[in-house]
Image (tube, rainbow, N blue to C red; front, side, top):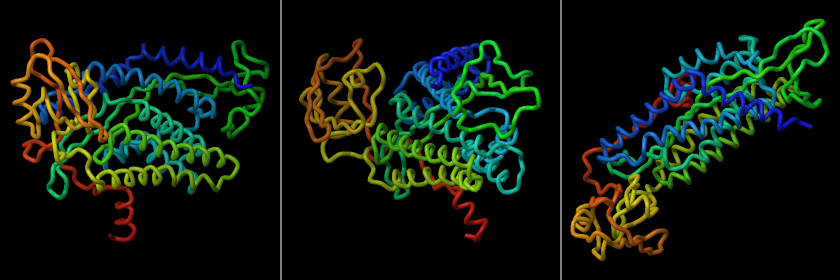
Length: 414
């Protein structure tokens, strides 16, 4: 049997020890800086920040640790080792691709291109199944983190579409520091068991080593702590943020599983290495274009309703957040006074009593909530969907550096 408990104990102990590494805290600081920039943009548009920066960074650390543990176990279960991954080729290529577009700073692109070159030309000397398995497991871990991460990383924004209309939207961005434990293969003298070594089943690893150990020696697997990072960037325009996340996670998981299956099969059928290497960047790019096209060209969800005002988001530590108001809820009245615009809502808040009733519509059902202002502040804490006259908004231009478009221009001149 696979020694689940022993492996999990090693991974948890090693991953937690990474908290003592300066690199982990440096990456966490960079994560905090990214969230701070997001909050600054939100304040510029709405005048308030919907989330606590400390909570965002803390949640990133917690979820990143969970992702690191899951990713480490999957990498160990499959048998991915550091020795022949060619990270010294993948990282520089990823940085070069980043100059084309920021999202190309991803192992799906750099790893796929390095693996493709190795499969077709024999250079660089990397283990293609190992590289593809690494890409698959990292994206499998990312799909899990996308699915479990809550609304703390969904930033509301006002989006100016190509037709000139302004709609509400959410920028979905996550950054996670990952404490990973990766296997490294070391030749040691003798053939007897090393003290403290864990006995593994005969079928392990799923990715066997490409060569036998030197004469008189044996391979020893050791776990090495590595600090990594994952990032996710998306947008919800026609969908609720939670639905958009669920779809993205599901699609990314399917891509990851298919890539991992090809990586494992390519150990026995070398011609599949080329297919896996092509799937890595092209499949990833297809997912991005397909999901973005459906979202940006779909019917926008956060627009002024025929009656009432629509909730785009709520602010932390306010009555609206404590009541559990959700994006897409329609506020019909406050303290018995109908509200059909932002100005009417402001007026109703101004003259309402300390305790008041909200009437909302959610999924075509009417609900009533009784609440009160906090600390004497006349603050409800609702960020409204745009009414069309907002001075600040974000414009999204079509990405002219999509990989498929770039390839068509290079190959066909159009």
